[in-house]
Image 1 (cartoon, rainbow, N blue to C red):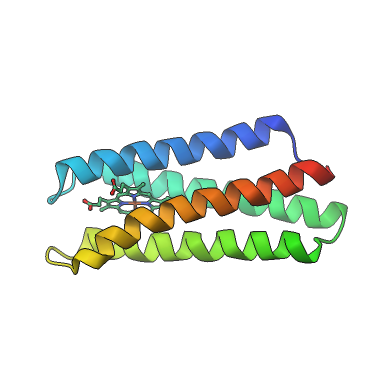
Image 2 (cartoon, helix red, strand yellow):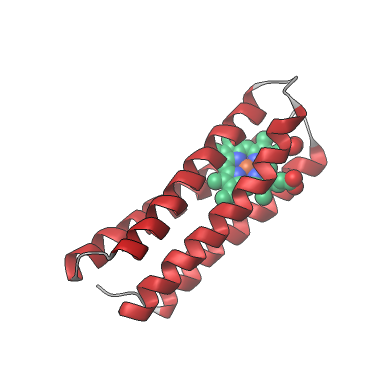
Length: 125
Ligand code: HEM
């Protein structure tokens, strides 16, 4: 299955929920409300699963080109780093201030690289 506007929209909605719950978590601070944190984490996992399915579908249609792989790997790496910094934030009460900065910058890098990757997928559909 190729890339459709609906898939773009669903992935975008995933990011909107992740960012909105993230901003709520930042405002409330420790101890984080369990429900919001769970939604933040579950929607992260669901969005990654959805994106992975898109990647698999697109590679079946035609192998990814070099630039497309770079965008895909960058998005995956930023996602992993966002999860690592988020996990650290939620697990430890006293963490280096740098981790909070990281868990603000990395989500934006993740969103940008994912948008770039999906745009490339959209162009070749
Ligand atoms: C499952 C892994 C994750 C966990 C456990 C987690 C946990 C957290 C926590 C605890 C906060 C509150 C931070 C604070 O009080 O300073 C937060 C904020 C936030 N998270 Fe996550 N997060 C995860 C994954 C992600 C991902 C993958 C993204 C985006 C792609 C993301 C985007 C954000 C954003 C935008 C904020 C608000 C940051 C701010 O306002 O400065 N998170 N997250």
